[in-house]
Amino acid sequence: MPPQASTFANDVDLLYSFQIWASLISGVILLGGMFYFIWKYKRRTDTDKVAYITHNHALEFLWSFIPLVLFLAMFVWGAVVYYKQRNMPADGIEIHVTGRQWSWEFEYKNGLKSAELIVPIGKPVKLVMTSTDVLHSFFIPSFRQKQDVIPGRYSSLWFEATKKGVFQIYCAEFCGTAHSAMLSKLKVVDQKEFHDLMTGAGGEKSIADKGKDLYNIKGCVACHNTTDATKIGPGFKGLFGKKRDFADGSSVTADENYIRDSLLNPQAKIVKGFPPSMPTFQGSLEEEEIKSIIEFIKTLK
Ligand code: CUA
Image (cartoon, rainbow, N blue to C red; front, side, top):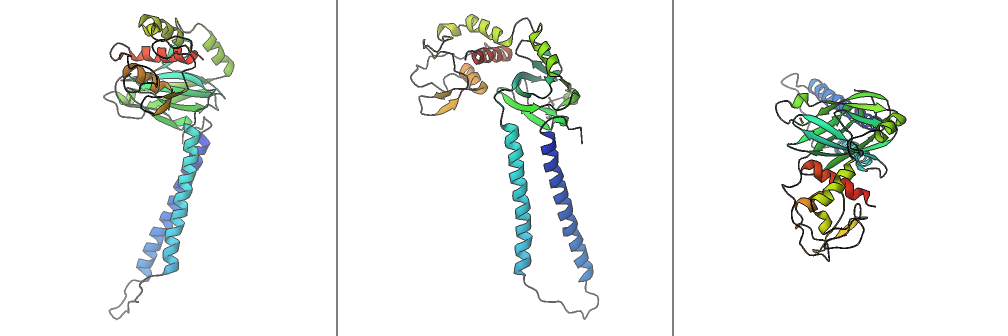
């Protein structure tokens, strides 16, 4: 097993060991029993009598009930580990991940971009990931974390590093010729070093500031206020993370994917009480720009 370097690693390993041992022990009992009975009840002479046995209630109950208990235990245990991994902490440090053929790119809130993922030890980190071309899968074996990275939408995962050091990142979804070379490193540094990095020079602009420019350049400003006041469309303030009610009666919590859909396919979900007049930005916004606008809206709390 690779070293355990996140808070999930031990959970996953325990569950995995349980499954391996349960399978191994059951396998030995089952196959061992089978071969033993083949040998023991072998017909030895032509006059050997064959016992007439139809069934045995107790035995049949047990060999159904014991596996049922084992499978239910694995299911419940697996679900607990899964929900812990999928339940994103609200105070996580967000880092954007872009997968492309054949590299990973990381961008931090301050606009700094890197080819290696740098995270602090002992703090929850949430990755918001997308792909500019085909399906990839972001995999950090030492953290026991893996998540598909999908073109056209955002997926996410989170972790908390427990060890400083450098860990391997793989792409775990076959994505073309150089799939096996789609590698990167994850560097776990102490909190002060990370803080210095984030408050240091950064990129030329923070992601949210780039989004603010786009808000003006692309004309969002014509219909949307940065306050919560309504113009032609809803105001942006407090929008992220809020429940949106739609004209068709459905509703959704405004997350990254919702804002993305609203930019690219605005007619799909019309917020109750507003005209369906938003034009699509499909083709006129780059992946990078969509991310920036989302980050800008997130800052308008
Ligand atoms: Cu990207 Cu395989």
